[in-house]
Image 1: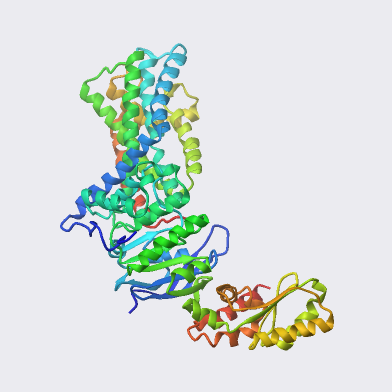
Image 2: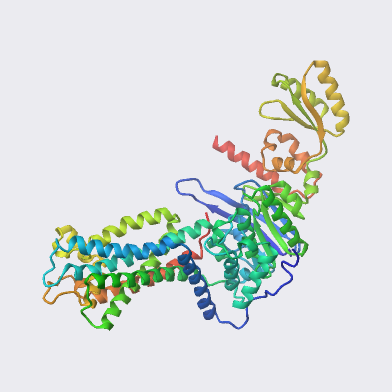
Length: 352
Length: 283
């Protein structure tokens, strides 16, 4: 059994006067011990709700969650001593100093007065918080608050660390600093579940990525597996005029191995191709004959962006035919993706 | 930056400590948090000391010539009213502070820790209690300077102060619950202002309730604030002998009424607040 194992988590919120929101819709998740798993998804996908369920803050309506063999829902009091949480909003007391914040957390973990103080001092040193040690947090930057908050999650030796969007809202330098800290933690073998909307972050920090959308995991694997899952290279062209869009689409369809995707203004076209260099040459030759003018043309490998867009539905809805075949090579792709799309389409049909 | 996790002095919770000692310690830690806040945010302290002084001076000097209290002076009459109003308003910080903590996400931090679920509320209401203790001391000193006198025994005066503080403490639990329910510090502030102002004014706090027009008089007679003011007045010995006594039970036995009120508020809102706390989370 994995260290963190969740299955069928369901949580529905009903805002006043609005339709119920399925924050979690049968979410399954498994995090092996000593690994970093990223929960990747757009805003509102259910990332924070997942973390809240696993950290005992909210109870799901259905499903089970187990951490280190302990039932999270039945025995939250046995989970709390073994987890560390650092949330999206730096949960620090603005009126306390950095030291007082960490000391308070230590005392509330029942470490005892002297051990709490020692640990707080130690963390101040480790996280480079000396500046904030004896001044109220109020006057400090978002990055500094995040670091204090993260240090707070590490006051005891948590068996598992939850990081909910650890870099959202930070400036680029703050983000790099936070990545360094997390990389160090990971090097020490902590089991980490982190959520992020940034592919780069998931790519860089996580061993395994679970792509989450509308409350369930729609794909899982390493960054490479996910990229491979949507197949080989792409040919990308950029038209001078959108008048040529239809003709260009026809040409791309002929030489590509699937339907091309077209941007909203019709000027950026992308098509998957089995032999991309050959396809690009032929496409350019044909464009020359037809007198279609280009700003730019090239080949590229799939990025996590492609995976992300595809899986979260935005691109997929424009090219449903390609989806099935694209899903095959990855292997690890979660099987319910197709079902989910079908369900969504059904729901849309019903609505209209 | 090495050994963030697997080095250092920290360990696990000390074994052998009982749940009760954890509860005491957690309550103290969260109380200390609020005490530090009072120290660091001077406006709270300035407001809690200046406002009562202002009230005592305004009411005693503006109205003492207009309102006649047979057998006594308006200064003697008004002080219990000002005490009651001030401590009742002093109990509202718990409401806005709980809403603010919820907004800031620090409630999520607390709830993910292996601490007693009532500790945050205990610390919060203790913070209000301390503010009210300071207010009471300031108001009594100001009152004594302008001519207010305790005409009962020392012990009765202590009982009066205790009753005022306990009533406000119980009300803090009500406010804490409402703060978690409403979730907006601004709304809770405005609403408590809109509710508590009439509640303290349509009472016997500033004028004898007999002088009010009938509908207001009836409201005033059953108003819990009236009972609180009446109880404090009685215990401070500020009711002149021979004053008319209302037939309303809560007025005839104000001390017992207030004690019952305190017990009822605590019995309902302590468990309700703790239960609510166990379920809440940011957003």
